Image (cartoon, rainbow, N blue to C red; front, side):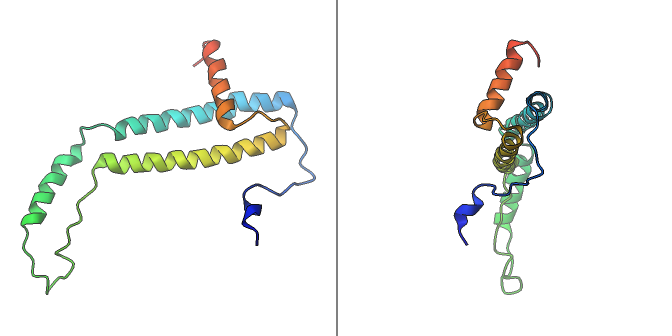
Length: 144
Protein backbone atom coordinates (compact mmCIF):
# COMPACT_ATOMS: atom_id res chain seq x y z
CA UNK A 1 0.00 0.00 0.00
CA UNK A 2 1.35 3.39 -1.00
CA UNK A 3 -0.20 6.25 1.04
CA UNK A 4 0.75 8.73 -1.68
CA UNK A 5 -1.92 7.19 -3.90
CA UNK A 6 -4.66 8.47 -1.58
CA UNK A 7 -3.65 12.12 -1.81
CA UNK A 8 -5.44 12.64 -5.11
CA UNK A 9 -8.37 11.11 -6.92
CA UNK A 10 -7.24 8.43 -9.37
CA UNK A 11 -10.57 7.22 -10.74
CA UNK A 12 -11.39 8.33 -14.28
CA UNK A 13 -14.64 7.13 -15.68
CA UNK A 14 -14.55 6.87 -19.50
CA UNK A 15 -18.24 7.76 -19.84
CA UNK A 16 -17.87 11.09 -18.00
CA UNK A 17 -17.52 13.71 -20.69
CA UNK A 18 -16.50 17.29 -19.95
CA UNK A 19 -19.29 19.78 -19.36
CA UNK A 20 -19.47 22.75 -21.72
CA UNK A 21 -18.01 26.03 -20.52
CA UNK A 22 -21.24 28.11 -20.34
CA UNK A 23 -22.93 25.45 -18.20
CA UNK A 24 -19.91 25.26 -15.90
CA UNK A 25 -19.73 29.03 -15.53
CA UNK A 26 -23.43 29.20 -14.82
CA UNK A 27 -23.19 26.43 -12.21
CA UNK A 28 -20.25 28.08 -10.47
CA UNK A 29 -21.69 31.61 -10.43
CA UNK A 30 -25.32 30.75 -9.68
CA UNK A 31 -25.10 27.64 -7.49
CA UNK A 32 -21.65 26.78 -6.16
CA UNK A 33 -20.23 30.14 -5.11
CA UNK A 34 -23.49 31.51 -3.64
CA UNK A 35 -23.86 28.38 -1.50
CA UNK A 36 -20.25 28.65 -0.37
CA UNK A 37 -20.79 32.32 0.45
CA UNK A 38 -23.90 31.62 2.51
CA UNK A 39 -22.04 28.90 4.43
CA UNK A 40 -19.16 31.34 5.02
CA UNK A 41 -21.65 33.91 6.30
CA UNK A 42 -23.16 31.39 8.72
CA UNK A 43 -19.73 30.38 10.01
CA UNK A 44 -18.76 34.04 10.44
CA UNK A 45 -21.96 34.68 12.40
CA UNK A 46 -21.33 31.65 14.60
CA UNK A 47 -17.76 32.79 15.21
CA UNK A 48 -19.13 36.17 16.29
CA UNK A 49 -21.52 34.49 18.71
CA UNK A 50 -18.70 32.32 20.03
CA UNK A 51 -16.61 35.42 20.75
CA UNK A 52 -19.42 37.13 22.69
CA UNK A 53 -18.02 37.70 26.19
CA UNK A 54 -21.49 37.79 27.75
CA UNK A 55 -21.88 34.06 28.23
CA UNK A 56 -25.15 33.34 30.05
CA UNK A 57 -23.78 30.03 31.32
CA UNK A 58 -20.76 31.67 32.92
CA UNK A 59 -22.54 32.66 36.15
CA UNK A 60 -24.03 29.18 36.47
CA UNK A 61 -20.63 27.59 35.94
CA UNK A 62 -19.08 29.79 38.62
CA UNK A 63 -21.79 28.83 41.12
CA UNK A 64 -21.39 25.14 40.28
CA UNK A 65 -17.64 25.44 40.64
CA UNK A 66 -17.95 26.95 44.11
CA UNK A 67 -20.44 24.25 45.19
CA UNK A 68 -18.20 21.46 43.90
CA UNK A 69 -15.19 22.74 45.80
CA UNK A 70 -17.17 22.82 49.06
CA UNK A 71 -18.67 19.36 48.65
CA UNK A 72 -17.40 16.64 50.98
CA UNK A 73 -17.79 13.06 49.80
CA UNK A 74 -16.49 9.80 51.17
CA UNK A 75 -14.25 8.59 48.37
CA UNK A 76 -14.36 5.03 49.74
CA UNK A 77 -18.03 4.89 48.78
CA UNK A 78 -17.66 6.73 45.48
CA UNK A 79 -14.05 6.95 44.25
CA UNK A 80 -15.00 9.14 41.28
CA UNK A 81 -16.86 11.73 43.31
CA UNK A 82 -13.67 13.48 44.34
CA UNK A 83 -12.99 14.46 40.77
CA UNK A 84 -14.21 17.79 39.64
CA UNK A 85 -14.98 18.29 35.96
CA UNK A 86 -15.71 21.97 35.41
CA UNK A 87 -17.99 22.77 32.54
CA UNK A 88 -16.36 24.46 29.56
CA UNK A 89 -17.70 27.94 28.92
CA UNK A 90 -20.11 28.22 26.01
CA UNK A 91 -17.69 30.47 24.13
CA UNK A 92 -14.99 27.80 24.19
CA UNK A 93 -17.37 25.07 23.06
CA UNK A 94 -18.77 27.18 20.22
CA UNK A 95 -15.29 28.29 19.19
CA UNK A 96 -14.17 24.69 18.96
CA UNK A 97 -17.22 23.74 16.89
CA UNK A 98 -16.70 26.68 14.51
CA UNK A 99 -13.01 25.82 14.04
CA UNK A 100 -13.94 22.23 13.29
CA UNK A 101 -16.67 23.27 10.84
CA UNK A 102 -14.29 25.62 9.02
CA UNK A 103 -11.79 22.83 8.67
CA UNK A 104 -14.43 20.47 7.31
CA UNK A 105 -15.72 23.19 4.97
CA UNK A 106 -12.20 23.67 3.59
CA UNK A 107 -11.90 19.96 2.86
CA UNK A 108 -15.30 19.83 1.18
CA UNK A 109 -14.59 22.89 -0.94
CA UNK A 110 -11.21 21.59 -2.00
CA UNK A 111 -12.68 18.26 -3.04
CA UNK A 112 -15.64 19.88 -4.79
CA UNK A 113 -13.40 22.31 -6.63
CA UNK A 114 -11.22 19.43 -7.85
CA UNK A 115 -14.29 17.69 -9.28
CA UNK A 116 -15.57 20.90 -10.87
CA UNK A 117 -12.21 21.49 -12.53
CA UNK A 118 -12.07 17.89 -13.71
CA UNK A 119 -15.54 17.98 -15.25
CA UNK A 120 -15.29 21.50 -16.64
CA UNK A 121 -11.83 20.98 -18.03
CA UNK A 122 -10.50 24.29 -16.78
CA UNK A 123 -7.73 25.29 -14.49
CA UNK A 124 -9.22 28.13 -12.49
CA UNK A 125 -6.56 27.97 -9.80
CA UNK A 126 -7.39 27.22 -6.20
CA UNK A 127 -10.94 27.40 -4.91
CA UNK A 128 -10.06 30.31 -2.61
CA UNK A 129 -8.90 32.38 -5.58
CA UNK A 130 -11.97 31.52 -7.65
CA UNK A 131 -14.31 32.40 -4.77
CA UNK A 132 -12.50 35.71 -4.22
CA UNK A 133 -12.81 36.54 -7.93
CA UNK A 134 -16.54 35.76 -7.79
CA UNK A 135 -16.95 37.98 -4.70
CA UNK A 136 -15.07 40.85 -6.40
CA UNK A 137 -17.20 40.49 -9.53
CA UNK A 138 -20.36 40.46 -7.45
CA UNK A 139 -19.32 43.62 -5.56
CA UNK A 140 -18.29 45.35 -8.78
CA UNK A 141 -21.69 44.69 -10.35
CA UNK A 142 -23.47 45.72 -7.15
CA UNK A 143 -25.11 42.37 -6.45
CA UNK A 144 -25.34 41.03 -2.90
